[in-house]
Length: 264
Image 1 (spheres, rainbow, N blue to C red):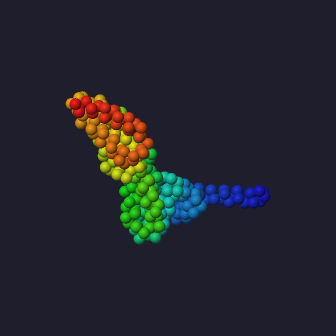
Image 2: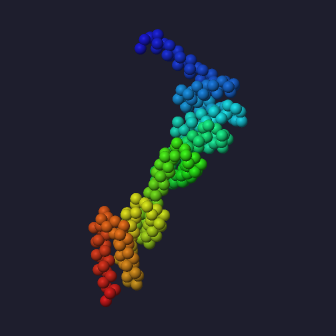
């Protein structure tokens, strides 16, 4: 690189840093706002945030506040500080319902909560909140250019809840609490009739019904064997070529054999 150009760039960088430090220490909120806006437009969002945090209270209610708070929220979002972004975008939409940026803010606010949604195995409070926020956006802006993405986000979040519900129901089978497994799997199938996990849910219900039946006391065995047979029929009716066909057929053979003792 040409030494002159290098020296010029270094001087510009030092001047920029110096101006930023001066803005941080300045008592003039207008100077801070100008510096924050400059950093925001340059993509230096963390630096912009430091300045926005200093001047936000002073500008509340003033003409410049609308643009300031929008950039403030965007800065949090772009630095992946989603709790703060969600809060700021929600505040913005409440304070400036007629803003040209209100729809974008409502969408990004809802999307911020979706970014906070954890893996399915963890507590899903944030997932439920994200679904509610995004559905509120869809209901309020049915013609939004963000509608396709919003629906996709909701679908993915609902699939996460669906996966968690299935895994919880399946876990009862895993720990051999077969009565609880049957009830939980029935509830899961009722709550998610179109679920991609229906085949597995029907199989684990069959397995739970079978295990409960063959390990029953004689007075309850016949009824439970017939319930297990019904569970087998439900699985085969749903998918005749189920991936669990061999295991299911083996269970049915044992069920039929054990039922014979009650037919004498």
